[in-house]
Length: 240
Image 1 (tube, rainbow, N blue to C red):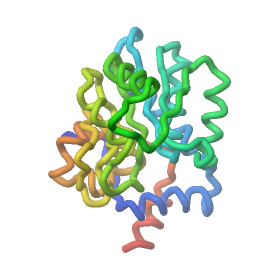
Image 2 (cartoon, one colour):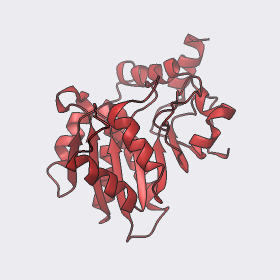
Image 3 (spheres, one colour):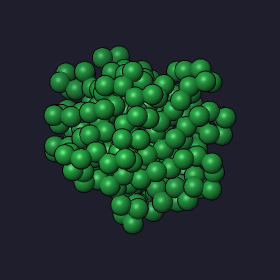
């Protein structure tokens, strides 16, 4: 596994959550700003992987990982690139910062379509088939489905989308952690996204460094989001 721009020791999932909480509640940073920084950095990275004729497909969940994906989509659109968005889950369960970014994106011409999280594998709906077709015709796929808080076996639409994403010729870029991979243990679901690149924020996560995770992580890149180093110091000393 190649790791780029690593300046801090890997974080546990709990420490990763603490970084955000301390930055927001003790340092007065806004969750929207952190998400904007993450998404902007990731958009710059993925745009540089392909040419301006590329077709980007961003698949989001309803948590903050999905919010990062929505920011990425907005910045790709702002560059004049072709991007479409699929969101898996219930609109009413979006996190506040993710809902805020969706509200912005929905005022643009970017296509944002929804898929229910539960999925009857016997019958592929028309909408599901459209999503699968887009995955297979994409130049680059951004996986913003599930983040570091996810663990256990993937089911329903998440499992289906990962299954078809892995069979696409698209370049696959995972945001923070490939969907289906446990960021704490490095364990993986039966269906786990096999990323060519994983863009994780602030520092690596311990599970991404496990040898079992390597086939899913691909090249690991650590992107900054403006978190002061003092926050990491507090987290390291507070959880040691």
